[in-house]
Image 1: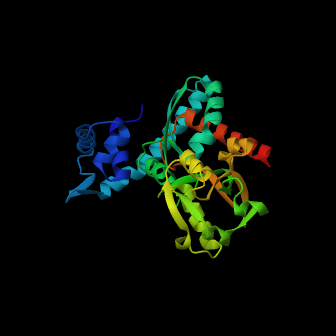
Image 2: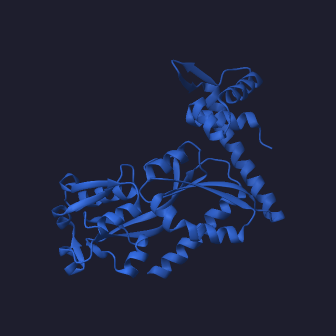
Image 3: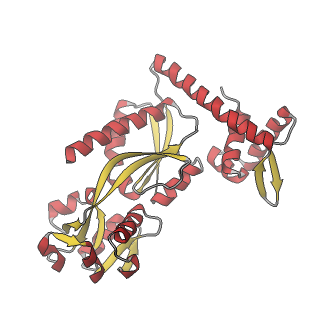
Length: 303
């Protein structure tokens, strides 16, 4: 119902890139360029300045962008209001989640959501926190769920639940006798760290800094991009690590790892992140509300 040319212009204006806009819209670049030119012909003015392989908005383009956001907000409200009356909730939602959340939190949540809304098709992309935030910024996904703070003030960020991080060691490790690890003791042992861009890694680094421990003093002997590989390396006695307690249900039951509280404690939020100004179908709003309730219920159950 909304003007296709305006949707395409809006994506290019936000990303300031015809290539990125084409990727986010699943269109070819010539098709995106054609739609923008059609809109420029309609207004009989240029909306973008194109110089040295870079583009920027003209004054007319800035005017169109501001009003396009308002048009999409009104269209969003109209769409949701009508669908609320008809009771229809359907469509395709593209989600993104960092590894910890995708593997240990989302399966149950999405399973319950799908059971309630069978006509909503969900596609999930998995990456580290940095990758998920980039996908949200570039409109590749509708909603991201991440495990570290988000610095982009242009995105909407909403805390879902609190996650507790703990230290893990092989059974019988010298640190395990007290049941708790002082933060300064971590640097005395070989440490296995998550990869660059990982939300867990970012949180650990900030935790060490706040506790007065130089992150560079960590004796990092291995960096891994897989939680299962990391846990396996600790089980094998290669080193110790810090990960989410929510990922350790199996290991706690089997006794294959020592799980130790950190002193001081380390917690972080799991958060939803999405565009502040973006057309949203009703299925997206329903998923957000469903996820909020899910997080609140499961957080209470764990406390």
